[in-house]
Image 1 (cartoon, one colour):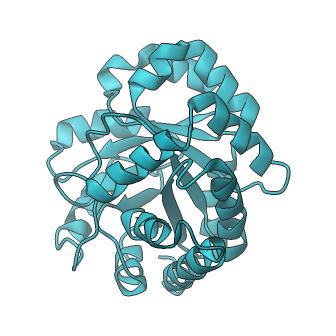
Image 2 (cartoon, rainbow, N blue to C red):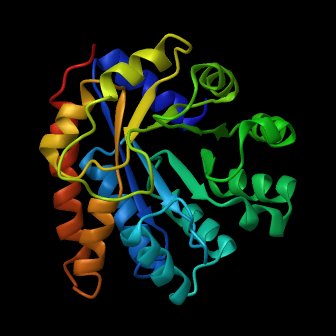
Length: 269
């Protein structure tokens, strides 16, 4: 069974919510990415999203754009990242999703990239700029490789299109709780409850809610509306702050552990 599917099944059985963590791969370098992944697994993270560095990350706010830039500067490429995923797999079975722009996949070749990702131990892809309407071949290849194709739903997604997206998604639905790009926010969006209810009317897939969740308190609140909470920019910001410190992994790991505890304190519905 795919690790993502297995993890959400286990969370549901235990009546727990999951924490999905996003970091920029190769920020500040790939060895740090490997060590952070292992620390996050120990901290109770349900799914790890690794942002593949790209020179034009349109969906990302400044914090994650800078992380992508640092990843590029550290020499991170898709093949080197896949080698790092394979290294993580020697010590951890944490579900891993690559958060990636299609140009990076196209450069390698769709079938080849999916084969390489699966062989390295990747569990799913979230391709930011590949709409479901144009992804039939991609979905077939992903299914054959045993990978989950994760799709985004936004507050502006019409219900008719929402219905199409959820039928084609696997693993979980990533609900973008705010319009615009990634980034930390001082409060959570007040439309989360209504939108997740609307999504749930069309699918039984788990819903992970992200964009703007920054603190344990916010994570606990958001966990009441979905099966998982996604935290990215707040963690990436910690990596930027402590990137040159020998205590990087310990400090970021402790912050992530506080988020995981907050999410798990929200009993499953």
